[in-house]
Image 1 (cartoon, rainbow, N blue to C red):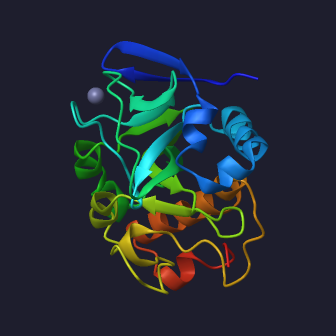
Image 2 (cartoon, rainbow, N blue to C red):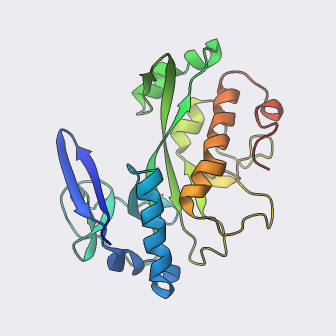
Length: 227
Ligand SMILES: [Zn+2]
């Protein structure tokens, strides 16, 4: 089965078939179990159709050497989503997903005050009916030994800075180091696919951080959520 991904580069829409073989070359777990990768791509296409399977390096998205754009898997290689330049996939290469989660903006003055600088940094709000949502970019990286180890969900340091939450580590805000969200208690992760990790954990984690940005104390913001 083929899986199409697409992205706008300015006003121009690029579209490609995800090359699962090229993707598996940077992930030991996917080389061992290609069906597992295909299941992941299918589940993300169903639940998070705008997220891209991308090349990561040392926990961050790898960027095209020619133009600085995201590197995806298409036409036999890891290549730039904008200019098709093939990317280096040697040391530190890993599979990751990059995309956005919408999160509800409650009318809290402390949060409202942060919205203009968030919008200026690429975190816009949009309206849906009477509700407003903030669109937050996240990355989700597979460890080499997935699904035996949990994937790493990270916020950008800039985003954490703008909402007044440190990059971590902090038990109060459930942050590990380097902008990584602490989504599971020790030994709690049971191999859930990344679409489920986003739905069951990351969405709530982000909602709690936004509560903190609106002035809720961290201990209250995380009550009843995640672990
Ligand atoms: Zn490029």
